[in-house]
Amino acid sequence: MDWDTVTLLVLAAFGLAGLILTMAAELLSKVPAVIEAWRRVRATWRGGQDG
Image (cartoon, rainbow, N blue to C red):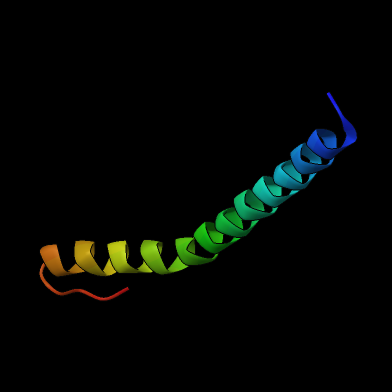
């Protein structure tokens, strides 16, 4: 294994880690909106009562 391969593997690993962290942050930022939408759906099913 030469240094070029090691360098490319390190760059790929950091790129993958950055991608995973970015996607996790996006997913977690959308959770409150999904919960609120689910509460509105449940309220509508129960006869339109808002919380």
